[in-house]
Image 1 (tube, rainbow, N blue to C red):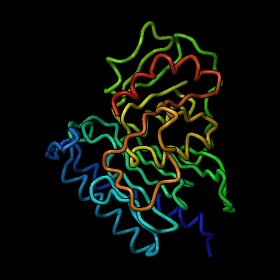
Image 2: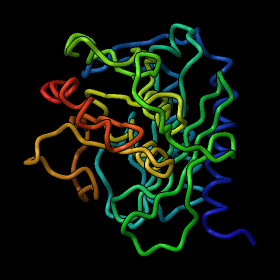
Image 3: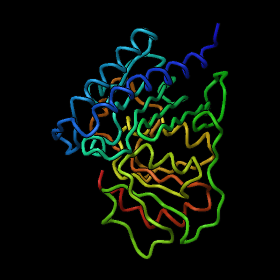
Length: 274
């Protein structure tokens, strides 16, 4: 009989790949509407959200779920999945082939497993992060089941740094790396863990944007750095009964610690948007 973590990983892989197969048929043809926060949503988002919740309820009936499209209140369960059915909905709706499905598994309010599948480019990221928990579990971060590590390259104008669309006007110049905008929060940050970029910033990510990625990038050796003030409540553990609809987590991720004092002054102002 497979152990718990093998079951978790197999479930995440089979479920996201099954849903991704259908979404690939819909890409570029889905009608999008604007939500209250200005982001887009399609019927494909809602269908994928429902399918993910249904699969979790069937396989792990004692696990809670917090999802982008339906349930934003953190439940009183030891285990909870946080799901983003389509990260990069604007890309998806317009036919741009970069978007993904994100699943994060939390134990007592803190992420311990993350899985992100990007169907258009056939890339699957996953990782395990024990942190301070007492769990017996695997470790490491992987891309298509091959181990990944954050880059240790020296900063230069030939290295990449990812930004989100909301942070473009707030960046200070000159900037010491080549800028890229991907339009997908998960892949934006995962690129650091994969050794593709030296850093990434997200101005207003929600919990469903980062729950899975928080695990993977740290397991890959990258550094997760909050851009919120010290007075703000900590990111994890999440609080039972809290509504995370409006809560943003401005974040800087870098390949190694020495890059924080270089990049943070250049992107710090993005936190003022939350």
